[in-house]
Image (cartoon, rainbow, N blue to C red; front, side, top):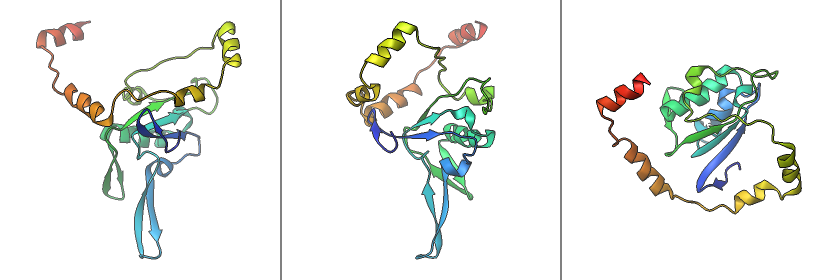
Length: 175
């Protein structure tokens, strides 16, 4: 999916590994010998949708760089802020915590994600059906876009206009 448009969004998949550095996802300054100056070259985070595959295989420092970008919607590098696209969102996978070569994600980082799903092994019947069926990636190409970028941004702006009464907030907090 790297650099393609999926679901109407430009997206990148980043495979997180133990040797992945923050600069590998953020980008960095590279010297242009023709113009005798450094130029910023954006990394794969500079896209509307990021699939962070196996996020907990990366070091806490690299995880932190991604999660800071998610929180602040920009990258800070060499004293400058580089804004990320709007919208910008991340979908992440992680390996089981007991698996070797993983770094746990602290609660403060997990809070940045809207939801968490746990997938268990498929039943034998389901697994056999998966083996017999066509490649699921081909089915994804047949999906159509439901919302345009403008519609998405319009709905996103409506969220800030939702108000919650004090009584409802108190009730939810008591739960």
